[in-house]
Image (tube, rainbow, N blue to C red; front, side, top):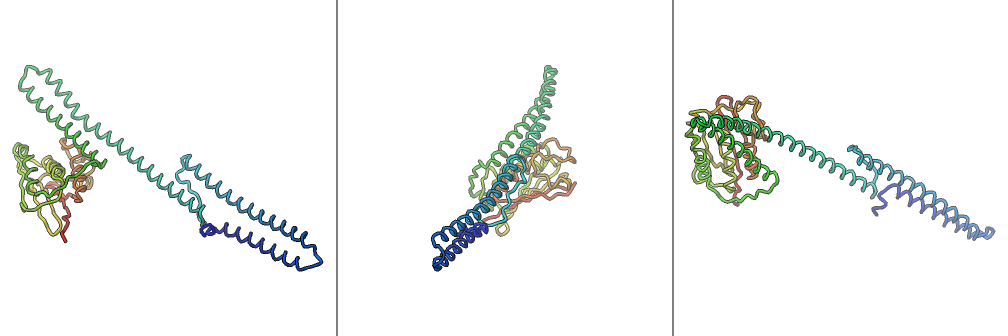
Length: 345
């Protein structure tokens, strides 16, 4: 019986059984003695047995009440804010099992509270980052608007600052779009419509997306790989990830630099490499480049908003892939993306 797992309950039962056994034995002896009044003696021993049982029960319930009061004290302390409060549950039995479950519940509540605090801190930092990221283009737009008003009769100035305003508006739009996409990824509301896609066609789509910019900045985007390789993926989302990595490469290369997109399938692994011969990433920054809103203290770049690589990583990992970066300062950067291709048995 589970109830007897508790040593105190077991001891109480033993004491009660012992009292009854002593009473029965004494009653049997007295009934065999003709010179002793049997009824009176049996009554006396029954009274003694009842008193002994009541005493043992009182001691047991007194101990139980003491244990429960200690548990209530710990629960009250926890409710008052002491997250280290715990109920002692070193014994066996159903009551101590209940105490153990309460302690487990407290640990779970502490973990949730800690996670909630981290989420609040993350939200606070994110809002501060968003505010900071919006402040720069908005301030620039305000300046450009003032210049446009003062240069209303100068077509050349109007054209120049209109172009600059479009660039700042583009930055704001990119920030908002990336934030919406990351929020969807975090919330788990993105439904990936995976189909077997040709890798060459996806990479060609990325190349065409940046063809105008690359030509304008006198840079080159090359494609190298087997045109027959395929991957089970959501084409639009995965192309978005590659776009962000290539955009990062364009942001950190100069006139005459080259960006190489190559891919190959080895056994059950598809590897995509995006390499550039740009300025490279400082060793102190390499570990942090996939963090949201991370901006290097060594970089003078003002184009990035610190979300592109983070979004790319989230999308790749949602496709059961991995991404890492290798870089040499002044020599260029290589992003290595790998996907596991399920093998057919």
